[in-house]
Length: 129
Image (cartoon, rainbow, N blue to C red; front, side):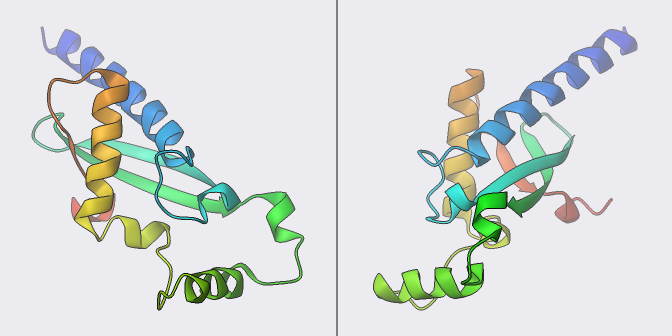
């Protein structure tokens, strides 16, 4: 019985990781303007006490065509933020600090996987592994 439970949990983990990868690379879901410039990889997914608690490790890498520009990405995003009358821009790591952004990701995950619950998404470093 334990093996069946572990296999189901592992299969769900793979589905969650694939869906999160798609969500984090989908400009229609992600609210930050610099999303098209990056490829986000979900390198690890772990669950808390239940599968409702999702802990992830993510890495963002600039696309090759973006790296070939003269203007550094940070300068570009700061310029664009000032044009929108904002003091700074939200980057990938900031997204997991503000709950409104993780809620957007969680609702998109719930919708894509047809979950009956809204997952709680946190960074893996919050789990303390």
